[in-house]
Image (cartoon, rainbow, N blue to C red):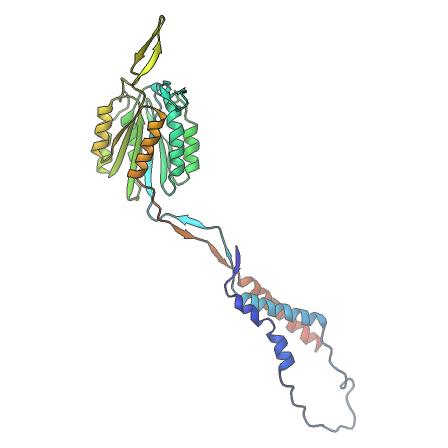
Length: 321
């Protein structure tokens, strides 16, 4: 956005004309008698039209420079105290079980339910740095901590089952998520872990990773995903089974307690959404913001043009003189 800081300076534009018309005329010297006048002495000096235009333009440029023209860039919001939050998502084979029943009665797999709710959760975390860790046979950092929520959402949307195996390396997931906070100066560092099973892979035990997180002042919220009942068809009939029999709730609860967090149970997409609303309340979004607008002073351009025109005017007057 273009703006003049001292707009009142434009009131000086008619000043040269006012001086020209209202100043007192110079007193005429007494007459001198000469036997003969030099040639052309009685002729009135002509003022070049271009000279007048150049002088007027130079004056306008000087006034324009005095008014301090400024160009303001787009506002940039700065969060002085942001929160760092890592999202650790289970990609083991059991996340493909279709036991998450939506409000419409449709059965969807666990990963789809997690992605749908987590996508909305990410979109609301304005002001937080977010990152994404995926784990199955092993864990890896999918998205480093960033303020770019759109990138985190895109990376989450691209996750597919079977990408890194079928097992569940919860300990590794927590370890890598905690490691990303090594250089973090955020006053609050949070991990949200989603899993539907027990630790069956990896080189570090979940409780060891939780102890490391606790020493690093990291809070962990754990979420156990999966229904408790599911109708399974057999050759002759159907039977009710517990698809979450492998879920180690005791371990997930212990991990959360060790770091000052909480454990939540999500049996359907509705409960999962409520859990994220509760996490929002426990870890409220930082609303303290500072707005900064980049500013570029432009007075040097009309000032430089005025000086250039002044040089041209002096040269033209010497030639005409």
